[in-house]
Length: 431
Ligand SMILES: Cc1cc2nc3c(=O)[nH]c(=O)nc-3n(C[C@H](O)[C@H](O)[C@H](O)COP(=O)(O)OP(=O)(O)OC[C@H]3O[C@@H](n4cnc5c(N)ncnc54)[C@H](O)[C@@H]3O)c2cc1C
Image (cartoon, rainbow, N blue to C red):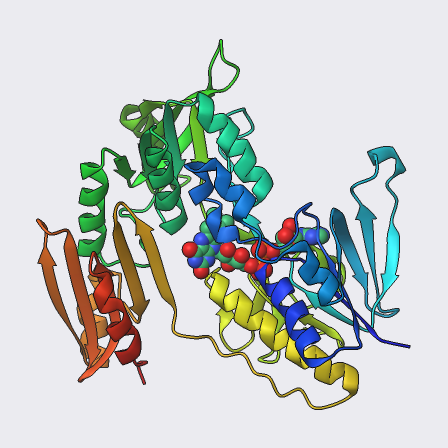
C-alpha cells in the first residue's frame, strides 16, 4: 500500500513541498490541506490587486489540471485543529458544510508537513472591528478591500514597512487620498538607514502621500451616519511608565491629532500560525522549531515557511523565497524519511534581499546594513566597516554601500535598478 503525506497549509511552502515530493517520488499519496477556499496563488500580488481588480483572476500559480497530473489532492476549506502524533493522524473540520453539521474528522498520515504560515498582526486599537478597516493576507481580504476601496476617498495605512508602503502606493494608483502612519521614527526601519528613509519619505511626499512617523494610533472613530470608520486619532509616541502615567496621559491628550478617513488598512507585521503546533505538543518558540533539515521536535513531522523557526537561523524574514526554499528542503527530506534513507537536503538562509517596486522607482536592500545610526560608529569601528554614499535628489537616486575591508557586505539602492544584478553578484557575508 502506498504511503501518505499530509501537508497542512497550501501557501508557497506547502505547495513547493508537494511539488518536490512528487518530483522525487511517484508513489506516495499527497494531500494538501488548507483553510482557504482557493488553490495555491501568489500572495505577493494581493497588494497590486488594490488598484487592478482583474489581477485576482490571474493570481493562481498552477492550473487545475496540474493537481490532477501530479496526483496531488487538495482539500480546501479544511481547518486543521490538532495533530495526534502518537497515532499519526490530524484532526480537522470541513468548513464547507453548514456550521451545525461541522464535526471533528480524522485522517492518518505516514509523514506530515506543517506549513501553516502566518496571519496579519492586528494591534489592539479601539475601533478596529468596524467596517472599512482591514488587513491584506488572503484573496478574501483583497476582495473585501477592493469593495471598500470603491466607496473610499481617504485611506490611511497603519505601518510604514514594505507592505504598508506598497498598499499605500496601490491605493494612490486607485485615485485615493492616502496617508501612512508609522510608530517608528522612520519608514522601512528594517531595510533602510536614516538617510534612505528620509529620501523615501520625500518621494512619497512628492507623490502626495502624507506620512506621519513616530506616531501611535490611539483609536479609530466610527462615522455616525455611514456605519464605517470616519477617522483616526494619533498621538506622538511617548515612553510610558506607571509613575508618570497620569502626566503622560495629560501630555498625550495635548499631542493628539485627528486624521479624517473612510478606510484603514493595517500592515503591522505578521503573527506566526503556531497554535496547532503548540496544542499538539511540538516544540515552539516564536515559530515551530525545526533543524536544518526541517524536522520538528516530533519524528515524522516536518515544518517549513513563515511559521518555522530554524534552530540555527531563528525565525525567517517572512519572505516568499525563504518559504519556498524551506518547502523544497522539507519535500526532499520527507521522501528520504519515507524510504528509511538518510535525509540529505539542508536549508541555509540565503542572503536576505528586499525589493520594493512602487512610487515609480525600485528600492533594493541587501546584506548587512547597520540601520541604527546611533550605534553605527561603534559597530563599524569594532567590525572594521566603512561605507560610501552617493545621492542625487533631482534624479531620485540614492546608493549606499557597506564594506568590510574591501568586500561589499551590504547595499541600499533607490532608483538604480540597473545596478542590482552587479550588487547581487558581488555581495559577500561578514566573516
Ligand atoms: C500582500 C503581501 C505582499 C507580499 N509581498 C512580498 C514580496 O514582495 N516579497 C516577498 O519575499 N514576500 C512577500 N510577502 C510575504 C510572502 O507572501 C510570504 O512570506 C509567503 O507567502 C509565506 O508562505 P507560507 O507558505 O509560509 O505561508 P502562507 O502563505 O501564509 O500559507 C499558509 C496557509 O496555511 C493556511 N492555514 C493557516 N492555519 C490553518 C489551519 N489551522 N488549518 C488549515 N489551514 C491553515 C492559511 O490559510 C494559508 O493558506 C507578501 C505577503 C503579503 C500578504
